[in-house]
Image (cartoon, rainbow, N blue to C red; front, side, top):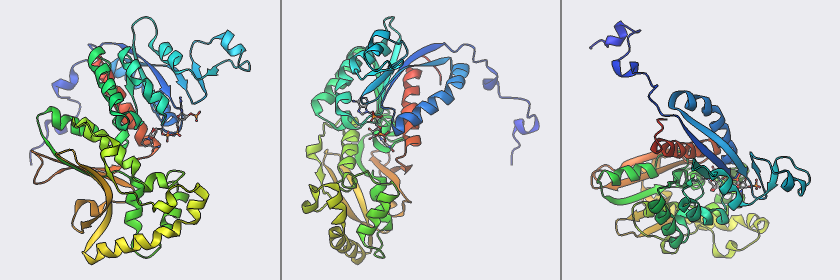
Length: 383
Ligand SMILES: NC(=O)c1ccc[n+]([C@@H]2O[C@H](COP(=O)([O-])OP(=O)(O)OC[C@H]3O[C@@H](n4cnc5c(N)ncnc54)[C@H](OP(=O)(O)O)[C@@H]3O)[C@@H](O)[C@H]2O)c1
């Protein structure tokens, strides 16, 4: 075995590491956070912790200029007159997204970035105007990437026209590098043949645990109690969220897919779909027989049940409970893991897999933070 020269001389560093980083350009990025909820709060903590390191090592100064929630906002320049009209608050004032964006952008042509950590349609509706005004946008909110195609195209056009950037890695699998991986494949000249994935941690967990020992409704109640499901478990069981992620990836690949075109098979029986939440939870055991039948079908074929999203090279998209062979890569996922499989011209015999936890405030916030750093890098800062 060759001994490393560094092992003999631990004090000696390779020449590249001895180059001083003083040449790094100092740059300030004005940041506004929309939605200080679970992800937004985790992100604020991560930004706060990273600020000194980023300033020291890469010259990037992140300047948090404001935070806006659903009803109120905080701006760093306080307006006494406005505060006087709202209960004498010193720092909070009513939510006004236009005023918020204008404040973060400032008047002196600085680099400005808005982070949307809401799940709000009205916020997504603002992206084209913000981007056209030169404000970068980063988000884990799926509504723009999977919403009306015309708005998506307006966002693209605004980016192309003004140079502002829109990044949304965390919309698909939180902190997992899925959108960037696809982008890199395409940018380096590869051709996408198919995407297959398990995009719902909740449904992955339910499928992993659904082994016939317990009725499906018991597992859903357990997942609900553990906080794995949305407050209304039908938001997971319907597959809508998974379909949104598939649409985002399809559009990233250049295919103009819309939600209506996804062949979406909801697990929620039609009779339960429109009930109030309490009534739905009470009648949850109506899902047991159909789910037991699906499990029996899978076992008869020697396979496993998995909730799978699929997109082929012709832009055909489906989301359904599928029977997969026991040797399939998705048969061995753990807990709430997400997994995405890209089949491309280069990765065709053995597709490229990205796998790991695909939800949770901290990993989602980290995905958003990574997008912010890539934008900072494009502004001339080396993170
Ligand atoms: N949690 C995860 O693991 C995860 C994973 C991947 C992606 N995401 C996505 O990340 C986003 C945030 O998720 P979350 O779990 O953090 O949600 P959350 O805890 O419900 O927080 C949402 C935040 O958005 C704010 N908001 C709602 N409408 C607004 C408006 N019109 N203007 C400004 N702020 C508004 C809310 O304000 P109030 O505080 O006033 O209600 C709240 O602070 C969502 O798009 C979600 O789909 C989440």
